[in-house]
Image (cartoon, rainbow, N blue to C red; front, side):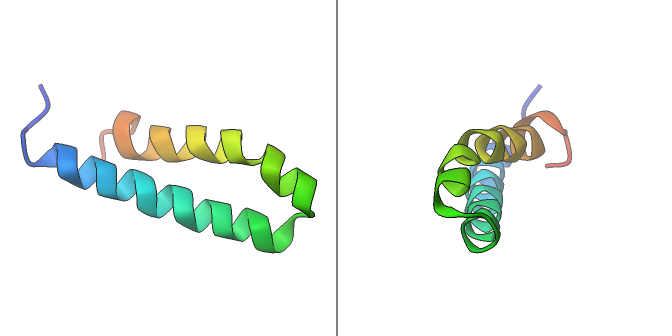
Length: 55
């Protein structure tokens, strides 16, 4: 059961994680690799925020 207060926290953690990993990918990888890394970054951020049960 998901508590009501965890949903905003999960959304916030998703966007923070997605932004941070996306920024790292943009800085480290070449342009086309960074574009291609967007989907795996989204999956990792989604797992971290929603499926890991840390929040």
